[in-house]
Length: 273
Image 1 (cartoon, rainbow, N blue to C red):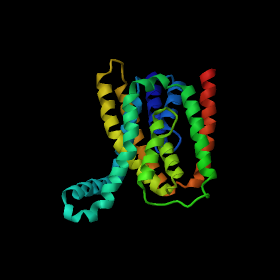
Image 2: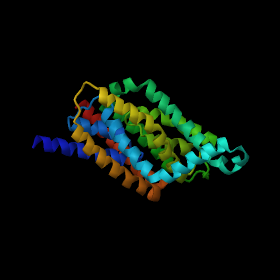
Image 3: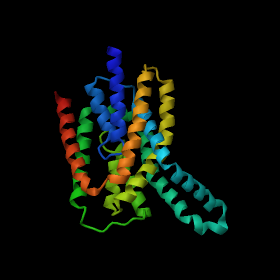
Image 4: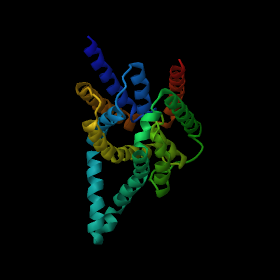
């Protein structure tokens, strides 16, 4: 019976990861909260990276045609100099993706070993409060300016800067990207696609590092539980991504803001009791 309950916990954590990863409400923060509630203290950041890999695969399934086109045209621009004008847009788009992805990748590597030390309910509570407050600002300013569709160099740099802070548990990666994009007046539709593609770039090396850590860790890992969580995360991420791409609007941010503020209060309360 105890084993069944444990596996149900992993299934639930996989569902949480899959649903929250792409929404601006912080998957890492939710995992910290539920791991604490379930008394499941997973080694380092291995479980988070393991389930992030499932989310990565789900997004690759959704965007494989876009990814293939971008990679193909990126190299055609380099090697077919006489036809560069045909591939220039995709070439520059890939460079902008890299500009946004590189900062969080560098910061994540530099502070990888420190993240486990701040992985607690207080950090998550404070970070979720900040996320909720910024999402509220986005909602309140939604009609204050005209937005543009094409991602500019300035947009990519701004999103790269704000996304750096998402290594902190409770600060949503997708939320920080949306905040950076909206601050530079990029349309939400463009931000969502761009953010998901950036996630793919960032997650590929992170997944390999996670696999390396898992193989070399001296702590015990429940591989069946991890596998169940992986499968649920993949399915939940796929469904959530499809819904976000088709349904998410700036008007919805008021609900995400209120939700983050409520969960922030719960996390801080749990820390002190």
